[in-house]
View 1 (cartoon, rainbow, N blue to C red):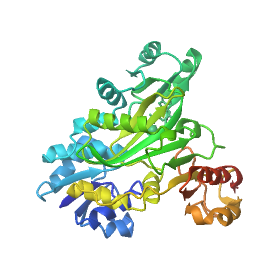
View 2: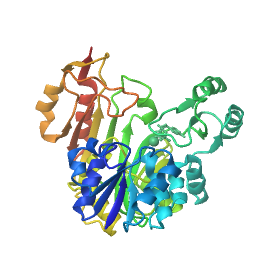
View 3: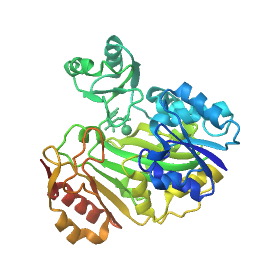
View 4: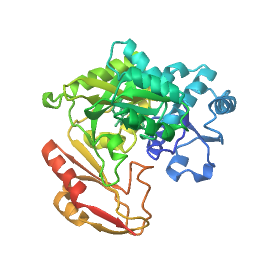
Length: 407
Ligand SMILES: Nc1ncnc2c1ncn2[C@@H]1O[C@H](COP(=O)(O)OP(=O)(O)O)[C@@H](O)[C@H]1O
Ligand SMILES: [Mg+2]
């Protein structure tokens, strides 16, 4: 089994997917844009070969380079779990005539308008939405979509260049801010709670499913520095009170509509106050922000390795224990520069240490991160618990009582 794995060490959790591929018996040919010597040792040791392609983001050119380099090696699979490169992986598959999702199928997971068109055609609920390239088109789209609305890049990530507009005046103020974005989606704003639906699929059938929730919604925590963003992975999916079921059913339908093949999916969906569920977006790759680790902590399994088994051998051998709800809270320091002081963490360790799964705040002396650039902010603290109420309490204490000061 020979697997080309594009971006084997970035984002950081990809190191574990690379390790998983090697563990299930694949020879892994890593493809990255940096020198081999810059790979972490554990990635280096899991690779049987490495191909450096400096222009990975020039999809057509990079695909040709990769296909030429590996064309005679008898490659079985070409994969990537990094959102900006999933189309490249598909293009290489198409060039090599390999199985797996075609470029056209993957486009449905990347182009947010095409995604909604395909999902809507299957009779599922998506936000009303229009594609726009010029200011005039944005204004026209706004007429069709109505207020309040969201403007966002057609293939965005991390809430970048995403704006809510409640009035025509808001819209006019937003236009200059998005001038550098070549194509946008203008969307009906969906009020409500924001969830995830994550799966590992084999030929479109989920062999593992998980539901998470963001607190508050990503657009809100990307806009206000004082917020400690939090996310939760639910223990069990079918608790009637949590009303997760409709989102799971929506997710299954979305994957069918888009022709999901084998691999990870990460979907975001909204539940409106009236209970209606609406698609946010879906990617054919794992969720970031330690969602994969949260699934592991929730289920006592190694889904990095099982993803690899699914991709290589179309099998998934772990049983999810579904034992714990898992919560992570991300912290942002006050002030700029290096972390000088951390308040409240000793008390958290003392009170809740037995439930802690992650204690990863930046250490004193570290440079603080740019909270707009990384969800990880200045570190995070995570817990797991069989019950939701104590978990929410621990998360609340970290949100409100742990403070980092930089200077
Ligand atoms: N139609 C919408 N209604 C309400 N909120 C939205 C809508 N579209 C995007 N958002 C908000 O913006 C965030 C980012 O948008 P999203 O489509 O997930 O793009 P990405 O995560 O790729 O940047 C979402 O998590 C959500 O909070
Ligand atoms: Mg998103």
